[in-house]
Length: 163
Length: 389
Image 1 (tube, rainbow over the protein chains, first blue to last red):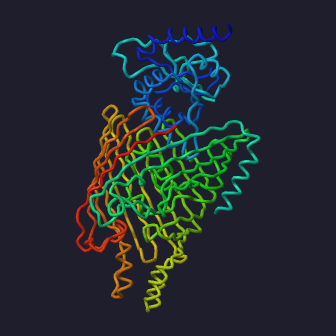
Image 2: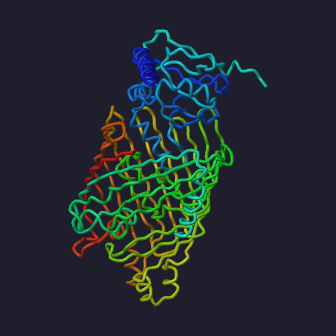
Image 3: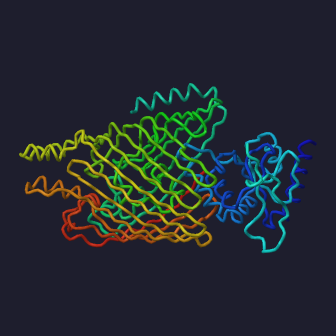
């Protein structure tokens, strides 16, 4: 019964998100306590190709659903899944890096809530719990003038208070 | 070195009880190569036979299989074991240990690695076996053939000197020793090349589109080769014989790499120079690659050149040795890569090559009919499929 309920919940989340991610808008999400600030699209690319940004090397979370993954890489990073995989292969096979963790969409939110050092990309209209914040929202494919279905909730660099 | 690897293996097995996370990865490639000249073999690095005279179609040049086990403990200690099955100097497919190390992440920006690592000096040298992650079927031999030493046994420091919003500066430096098998007679006998007292440093700056890498290495080279010793024995001039020998000779290697990888364009440039006071002298190499991504396709062109500066001698034995060590070739390669699936890539290449006169190191297994003084133009056709898992 529990398994059936979990499966049903997973299917509902994916079905609910399908029209959203297919509209090509994504949000980069971190824990509320993360010190990562709002990212530019260049920083998003650097983060998901080099594994680091803003002086930090956060724990990257990758979606296990290949169509969603491919869509994120193509629309935001402008690279195919194969090119992204090749980019990470060179890191993995030197023994210095691990591939980003892959997990199903329905597990990502709870993982980030439990791991403040992690960062993930999610469909932009997925409603987030208050423990998480958005540090990037957008896509290279949305027509000019079309409003984004999400907005960064983290502080921008210019808004940071001096220590 | 084998003892060190076994010692490390024991340490790794000892620590396995505290492993927090372990994972397996692998890569594989299969390739076929045809060479237009049947009076010599197209070979790569320490391989001793190839397409041309020895094989009409060579399936061994680019076919390999690799498996890697990586683990991490609670205490920021990492282990890596990687073995690659590929054709060796004596034409056998035997497993070789390419990574066997224990790394300690002292802090987020400093890691110390003990054991076997891969040559970090070139843009692709530390993962050159992973064909899937390369833009070509194989790295241009004009640069990657300047050294045949890739398995470094020793201690290596990985230091992140600077980490900014969208770029980082890293230094890899270490002390190592290495050995590598080669064969002068198509794989019938095996000789060893030994590098000792190796000191290397590789500085790289990575930003979103650009990668700059500058590497320097020094060390001492020796070889055990009865044929070479016998040839040098025929040289009556003791000073000449000593200067040509390869026993505990100091060498220097310098490499510069530049990579520009934007959305659709890929530019690669590498330059390398190696010098040693021995019969095979000073060698330089460079290549320039441009690739254009068109959806799943990436056609590319590479222009490469290598040349060797060796002394000349009136002594016939010395003269022959110098000719045998000269590698001077110009190549132009047209190729394309196609992403068959997200984890399988197919690549095809056609390479035109023109050795300079008396370049006895350009190919291997020269037949008496090969016009070494007036070498012809040659064509190398390659087809390969590669994957990672």
